[in-house]
Image 1: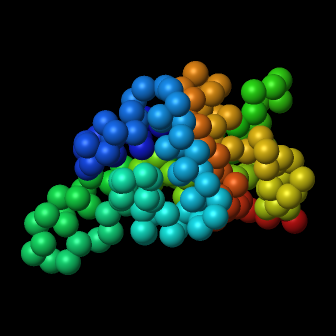
Image 2: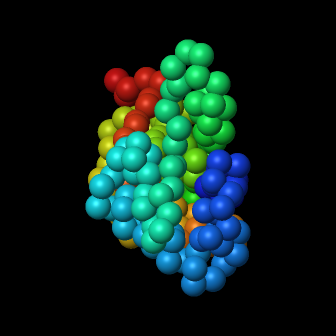
Length: 173
């Protein structure tokens, strides 16, 4: 939520004020529900490329690579917030399930990673099993991760990431 809020405040302050992005309440929840619905319906890539219309507001959620010499586009592009989270916990129960790494653009999940190595005696096949069998789609949502940290985000997203990536240093013999 912090990254999305920071991005909107920096790039579209009037819209950020209108949707009350920094205040937990019905206005913000309605906006986040709209954002979640658009991600579910259109996918993360489309939402990042084309933004979201919410009431009277058209929100840009990403600024693409600018053409050379376009100073305003360059300035907007530099406002994008690319973040990496290690050990992204998404369960609130005793299992403390987590993804090894998640990448976000402006607060929206783009990629998740499961990393394996010989020290943990796990390989690619273990990560594939985790994604297929151990990842309850209802639990593997950004809102669950953020609520653990007492910052309600209000929209799901990890299951709508662009890609889930598995990497192992070495496959088992």
